[in-house]
Each structure stands twice: as C-alpha cells, then as structure tokens.
Image 1 (cartoon, helix red, strand yellow):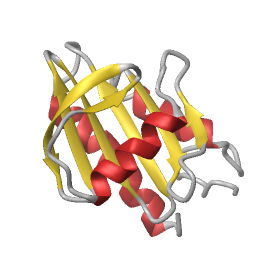
Image 2 (cartoon, helix red, strand yellow):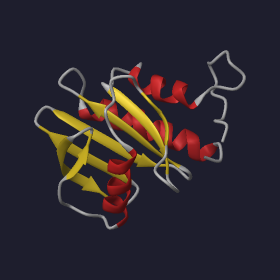
Image 3 (cartoon, one colour):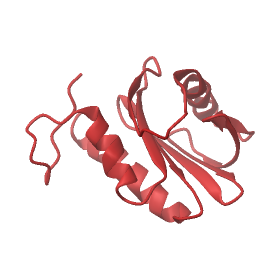
Length: 135
C-alpha cells in the first residue's frame, strides 16, 4: 500500500517511514506504524525495538478493551485507558500511545523529555489524518 501524501511535504509519494519520522520530530522518543490486518511493520523509528508479535498482542488487548499490562519494545506497560481504538500505557516516567486508523495502528512511545499529552496528540492526529485519507 502506498501512503497518502501529506501537506507540507515536498515528496509526491511519501514512504510510510516519513509518517513515523513526523511523530518523532514532535519530540516523541520513537514511533511506528503497523498494519491492522496482520500486524506487519510498515515503518518505525531507528531506536524502536517493538515487534510485530507484540503488536498482535496489543491489538488483541485493544479489541478486548483489556485493563492489564501489555508489552512493547520488551517493556511492560500499565494500561491507563483502552477504549478499543486508543490505548494509553505508562511505565514510570515513560509511556505509550496506540491509535487505530482504518488500516493501521499508529504507535508513539514517550520518555521523560516529553509530556503524555504531546504523544497522545501526535499519535491520534496522525491516526485521524490516515482515516481522513482512506487509511
């Protein structure tokens, strides 16, 4: 699948990597995009150690609106919010936001250098943008 074009970018056809990079450029530690249908990795930032296997479990956790712990990048997060479409997790000063679009799961992981709301906005805005563009 080819990603939609984004206003403000000079490339006509961006790679999915540009979407992950756009999230990290907003001060988020790392980011990724995965397919909802098979949890395949579409793109992720260089320092992101999350796996497709972890995403498969996160998607199941989101679908069941689970409230227990979940793992991403080998780290065990506490569920703060899970409405089935958006998942917030916390681990000390760090945290994670996952948001579903029509075809993708957008993931952002923040650390002590950014605020939870900053990550929530970056990830959810990207997810909404993808929905608006058929993804």
